[in-house]
Image (cartoon, rainbow, N blue to C red; front, side):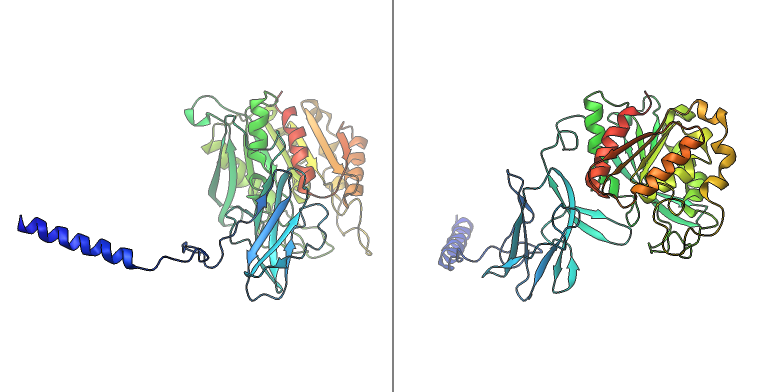
Length: 397
C-alpha cells in the first residue's frame, strides 16, 4: 500500500498547486498559434450580403481596402481604427459572387491574415471572399467534380509549367471518355483564376446537376509564358510577335499531355476552347489556324487586339494582320462545315467592345455565323462567370 499512498499524495499536491494559480483575465484571449492580440474574424459576410473586413494593425496610420473586383468600391474604402488596434469597414450589400481583395496598410499591400482563401494572379496573390445567393455558382449539395493542379514539362518553352484540370463527378471510377473544354484566363491572371475567383468548377457542377450541360473535362492552362508586362507576351510595344509562345506550348505540349493522361475524346466534335480578354485573343490564335480540331469557340470580352478597336496614336502595329495571316483558312468552306458554335459576348461598358465588334464583323465577312451578345457591365469577373454559365450548356450537344 505504501507506493499507492505516495502516488496519491503527489497527485493531491499537484491538484492543489494548480488550483492556487491565478485565473486568466477574461479580457486576455487565450493564445492561438499564429495569432496575437484580439481575436478577429475577417471577412465576415452577413445574411443581408454586407461584408465586414478587419485587420489588426496597431501601429498603422491608415488602412484602405483594395477591392477593384467589388462594384462601387473605386479606389477602395477607408477602414476605421478601434481602440484595440483593429481596423474595420463594412460595405454592401454586395451581389452574390467571388471577389478578390487586399489591404493597403500605410502604402504596403497585404493579404488578409485571417482569411485562408486566396486567388492567384500571374505575379500576385489576393484574398478571396465569397458572397452566397446564386444557385448557379454557389457551392451546393450536388455531386462535385475534382480540380487537380497539374505540373508538366513544356518542350516548347524548355521549362516546367502548371495547369488546372477539372474532371466531372465519378470520373475517378474509370469509366468512359469525355469531351474536353480548354478554358483560358485573361492578362495578368494565372491558371488558378478560373477555379478560384472564376468559380468554374462549381458552375460546371451545378450545370451537370441540373442536366443543363454534358459531363466534360475542363483544362485551364497558364496563358502567360513569362512575367506579365504591358508589352505583351515578349513582343516590343507596338509590334506583333513573330510567334505566340503560348500557342506553341498549347499545341506542342498541353493538348498532347491532356490526351495522353486523361480519358478524353479526340475528335473535333468533342473539343472546345474559350477564353476571356487575353485568353479570348489566344482562343482565336489557336482555334482559327487549327480550325479542323475545334468545333466550339468562345470569346469573352475580347477580339483581335491591334487590328480593331483602340490602336493608340501610332495606328496599327506593323506586319500582316490576323485576317491577312489566316485568309486561306478563313475562306475555306470545308472547315466551316462541322463548326458547331462561334460565340462572342462583351459588356456594353467594356473598353474592348470595338475590338469585339470588329472581330465579329471580320468573321461574318468570311462566311462565319458567330453568335454575338452585348451584355451589361464591363471588363469584370461578374461578366465572365455569367458568360461561362451561358456558354458551357451549348457544348457537345
